[in-house]
Image (cartoon, rainbow, N blue to C red; front, side, top):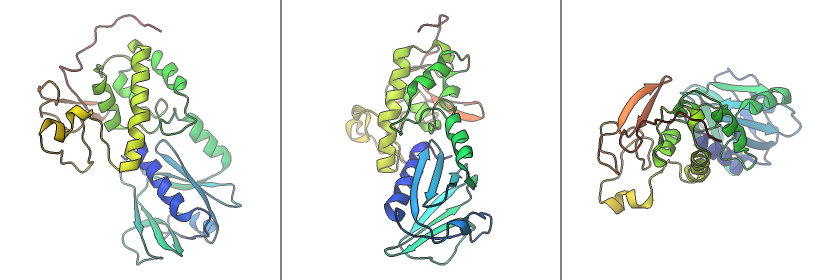
Length: 279
């Protein structure tokens, strides 16, 4: 499933090309009935909240809510209304300059009224990519939870937009046992994790890939070959199970946790023995 930086990146692309423009809106697949209501209207704004996107149009109180889920993808073309390929849930096009967006296979693509939008966004935790994010909401929930911190980092009610890659990498970068209960996390550790999300995720928006290694661990600095993976980017543990840790050299571990693969280093992230909750 795409992480939040992808949603923000795509929202930026939509705003760059469609903002203030009347658009042609269709649903070639026929499964998005709201497409016809937006046809010919002026594109107002695309805005991301974690992995959710809301697209607005002038003089329409409702917003198009998009959640890509596991299979959803956006496709772009520098032409107006090109030939249709695949099952296109929603298409937006402009003719000057020519540009088309195709959305295929999303988990959600439907109109939401303002009350529904508020219900969805208010249920989300702070999004590190939004300037209005309040990390105290995340700290309050983590600080009273007995669930493993690795599970909490993936909970969208705690950190909106954070997915498997960012959680694994932030916990590694700060030597945190991913199985430790959230309530044992120190305040300084929480702030370090949050700051990592705030600093690293905008780079993902800018570059279209996730890089998390410090300068001294880049391929150039270490004299090693670049990582080859469809997700791109240089990382410490994500999808590196069995490979040597870039710091200690011991094999990176992998285990399923809450139906997702967790990656960590047993040496750099030793099991915690904490038994006391601290503020």
